[in-house]
Image 1 (tube, rainbow, N blue to C red):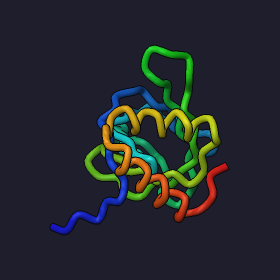
Image 2: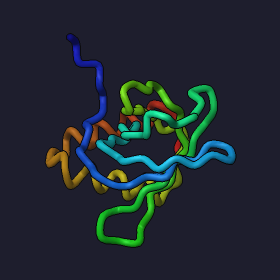
Image 3: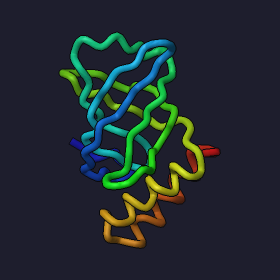
Image 4: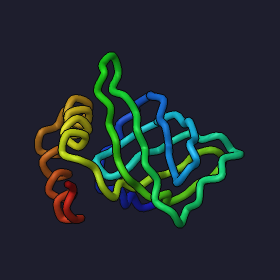
Length: 123
């Protein structure tokens, strides 16, 4: 299988809250990148793949919360892949720092940041 991933995935464990309309679902972050998340959701959730979601999760041992808007790309066997469509500057800064601390390769991180900026604006 050819690897198509352009962003390093970082194993990360946190409780996340997914909001879609009036519905809220508690999930677990399994891994993340500058482009998306892998979440473990209850198999009986009613999230709609065609509707945007909001995801919030805390940074470990802090009061900082990462908040983003995304879209569900796939949902199989309780694992939900989410692509980030909008994230505020503060949250992307924290996300970048998590990746930076875990990748350990400045050149790779800079290349991923360039690819991220090619995808469109984050505000």
